Length: 135
Length: 111
Image 1 (cartoon, rainbow over the protein chains, first blue to last red):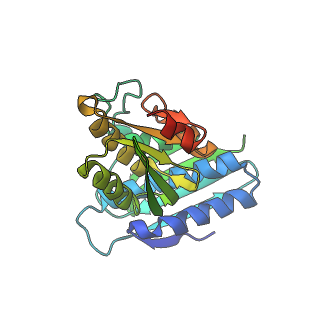
Image 2: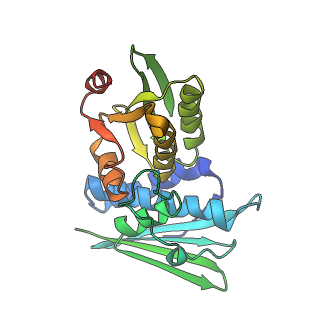
């Protein structure tokens, strides 16, 4: 499967969710897991658009979604500012309303929804790998 | 994403249809802000036609809830939350921050 290139614009989130959702469905994942991979991909891509490419117009990134018998692997390669999700503190989900921090929620969800989240800074760009194993 | 407002005696209902993500969350925020700007701090967010919501939508709800609860002037209830969205709200630790009802009119009646 060759990676697809998407402009770094939120308008493409629909298409990206349809793409990964279609792959997950074809591979026999449950409805719950299909939604989870769509949400995780959305959160990952939204962060790239917001942070890696902040202030950079006309940017694009590559997204790949591969399935084998027992797992689905989403890879996103961006060419913007390195943004390592593991460096972002998890929000305190027990904090009360006035103390609840807004930042870090997307990454937190991504980590909870997927079985593996890997981030590597490579010569060709920042590579984020998300893995979901069939339950 | 589409929003529709219905006015009741003690609150307004915001029915949100479609998908709330980083592309459409600003419009959702604008809708909630417009209610609060008019002095409406008691709202029911009716999710019966909501297909999808990412953390962008959750953040919009959180900001609005903070504003509505300030000075004890109001609150946002969630109604008819679809199962996938409820699971994500639970993961995000949001279920303690919002009272949830199965039926939107039941939520309205609780104000």
